[in-house]
Image 1 (tube, one colour):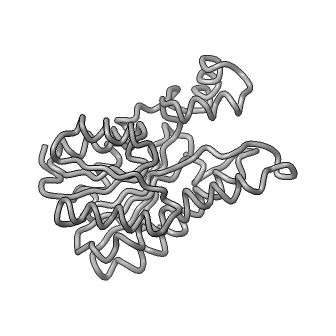
Image 2 (cartoon, one colour):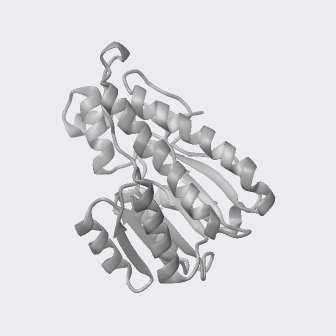
Length: 251
């Protein structure tokens, strides 16, 4: 359990289920972790759980100054930066394109795309050869579905951003990839499913299980193992890639 010994990671959306599962996996592999997010109580509790190799800061990923401050704080606290994970996300509105709310569309792009862009922009000057940048996209960044114009567009845009930065940073030996989770058994996903199906939580989960070839939701820890793969030398010859951890939904 030493694939990330001495490495330092910053994770936006760090207080969420995927963020915390990733942080736990990374700390177990020897990394130090800086959690950035919007919920102070959850960030504080998460860092306390992880112990002395964790720190946190409230961060709005759409605000350039706040993102830079978080990156600078991570480097000041741990002395370096090796793994950068843009994991912050929002559900966004659902609805037909003719009625889709413009402010929700703009907000989805701001959090997912601008947030990933700003994190990469401010982190790259601190990175050296062997570093890894990961954007948390989604299965709907590889496919799509009706009524999710904001969310799906943002998740596709993250792929374009990733490929651009991957090509730019490859000569420096810095890798950039996206990870594409399918439905995860967490509060975020359950709220999405209830809104999409108009049913209660159990019925909505059953409907979504029927869409997943493996027939079930992912545990956050399964997504974290994909993050660990992309962060570690196990994926040392991967850049510009889309890693689907979606139970077969994009196949």
